[in-house]
Image (cartoon, rainbow, N blue to C red; front, side, top):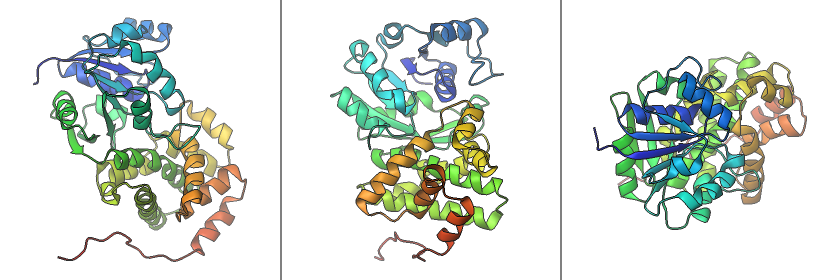
Length: 340
């Protein structure tokens, strides 16, 4: 067990709560910041986040607060678990209270709504000089708090940050792997949400295992193709933050994005699907941004284009599915390691 650190977790959602509880269980001094004073008071009183993680008692040492300065004062590590649409605003709020030596890690899986900007790029823009990292992987919050065996990835060009995050998070049930391709790891976390909507829709329509396997594999191909066009390493997508997170999100009804797709496959509108799950589904926003960027770069992404046609161009699912099967028959594996 490493020496106790002061850690701040910003965000009152399921993953922020899981990370805050987990690090408190590991013996660290943890403050979780929630925007709503009423929510923070209720969690402190009941020791349960009834809205996002009902049924799980939080560690007694975890302190929940709506006072951002209290949460950040002297914090050595800050996890920012805020949805993409509010991410920049919260980072600007935290800046005056942040220690110059604090390490800041994004756990958000999405893109800024107004353009092709990843969360770690927002951190770079708003917090110049801070050590920055990204935490991503196949990590459902409910299973983390249940202490089920879980692996995740910390990505940064700062080796000291990687080592420190591995030290504070690692436990017998939580393994933390390192990666220096921060851009690739973060792209994987954002992109997989799109394909979870696709596979959820396919499941609702009664598609079988053959279809699911094809969708997952071709999704991975699209992700790698897009990442390479942006300068990331496509081999990053063979790891936990790529194929691992893709499999998890595309095969479980614990995934918000999968549930949105499933509802749409049942004939519900996008608005009805979003209202039904009651939480942010990052894939809907990400889809618009990725479609625009792929068109701009000339990257072939038929699944992205097909989903966009269904959700925003109001084309029938059957028509789009038929066009996908009749489209270009490309190579199966596009990225290979040269023979020695």
